[in-house]
Image 1 (tube, chains in turn blue, yellow):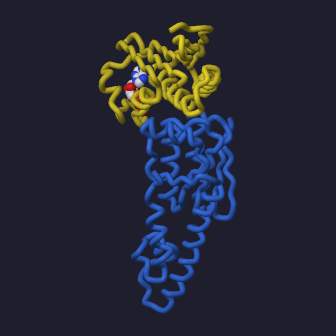
Image 2: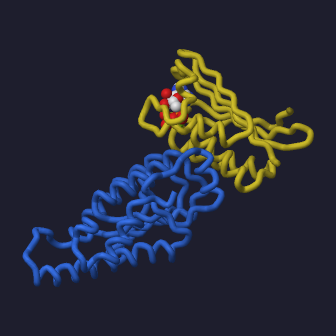
Image 3: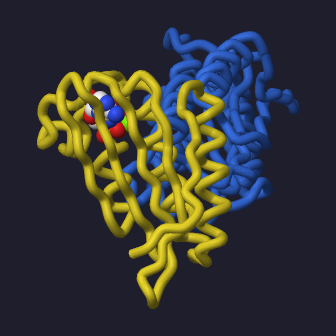
Length: 171
Length: 135
Ligand SMILES: Nc1ncnc2c1ncn2[C@@H]1O[C@H](COP(=O)(O)OP(=O)(O)O)[C@@H](O)[C@H]1O
Ligand SMILES: [Mg+2]
């Protein structure tokens, strides 16, 4: 029984799909990733599909599901390396993969996640510091960052850009 | 339109669906389809082969190169002797699925190819024929 390997790098999980995916393998990846996000507390998931020659509705749905699941588990997913022919075909197929963020290259994808993860971590520290001077408002840990604008003034820049970019899909 | 060297490929397991994609790619290259058109044809075939497997209970794909005199193309026919489709109009409605899919397989693959014909009778089975021509 083969599985797609999932690598951990800092607080990111990296997946590079190098085989022609049959449906069960895609479903296994979905399950394995959710487990690994929870087990590692990862904040980002990067999926490289540059080797995929096609994305059909089943694989597309898997990517959407992973993006939604990871968001529920407090991690962002970015799909990188989609081939132009695949993108053109997906549009004509009518598959828009709502909620899936894409980046053209691995570097861009990493920057997107790296920037986000770093921003949210440093916001967390700032908020913790700021809260030391104020009445405790019941928001703990990184929750204020995820809660967006309600999280307090110190986080505005990071949280705002994160909130805009993080919730909308690229397409 | 004349066909040459028709090949048969069983569609009985998920690995067969993967093999179908590879076979369609090979013939699409042989027909000199552009990379985008190859990708469209392979994606359509992947959708139709999955339908043959999941809804048709398995079947086969017949595939060959076709020639219209001016152009070459790939023709793939997906055949099963499964339950058939009771309401074709409904099945050809974008987003409609009787299972847990996205309901994009039939409507999407129809858009991705140049010719699309479906023939289905309840209790007899389903046949879908698609052709993609070189430009
Ligand atoms: N080969 C087939 N045999 C029986 N029913 C089929 C077959 N292909 C498609 N269908 C029916 O048509 C519906 C739409 O198919 P499709 O557009 O591929 O969407 P999905 O696979 O997501 O359900 C299916 O849900 C199924 O009810
Ligand atoms: Mg389908």
